[in-house]
Image 1 (cartoon, rainbow, N blue to C red):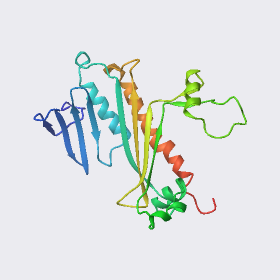
Image 2 (cartoon, helix red, strand yellow):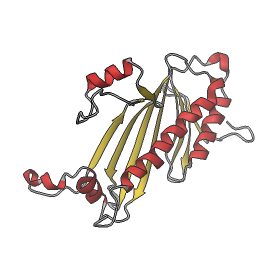
Image 3 (cartoon, one colour):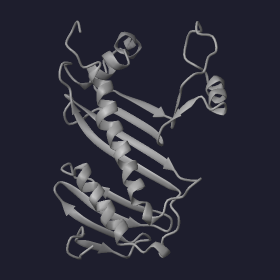
Image 4 (cartoon, helix red, strand yellow):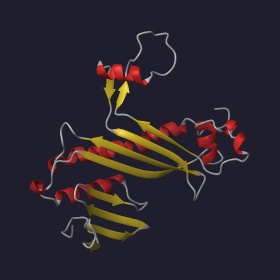
Length: 226
């Protein structure tokens, strides 16, 4: 990590169960931790771009020896960001009032919420067709989805995705957004030589947060009457 062109960590901690490289600065921390069955790479400062993070991952993976690293069966990617509310008064109005439409049913609490959030969980498939009857109404149930998957009537997506949208405590004009992607590789484990696939999973999670999730919010963050 200290070679020219590498990503330099300022500190090395060997006393813990997990040897850790880290640097403090820019309002956060850069961290690389080696556990008995996992490698954790984290950039927690707000200025970190997706380009910088993927370069860090490539540098760390490039410093490892293929024969010393077992197959990679599972990859997790977690990305957080903030989104500015444009037309709504604040993030509570956007999430509670428009996204979930919960404002009309808060009377039992006898007080309005100061914070609000929603959470989504997405499987790695998109069911293309679950019903033989074109006139059937409602969302497909688990049994119909399972049958469609068994019959191959699905569109494959990459990984499981959990999305959280919440009010940001420090500024209620912003929405705190987090995507957590889980990418199992049980059929074809990844190796260090598959760095491009590892980077692709990071971009997949990033795009889901900054593009898909932002487009979802923009549908509700509109001027009154639109």
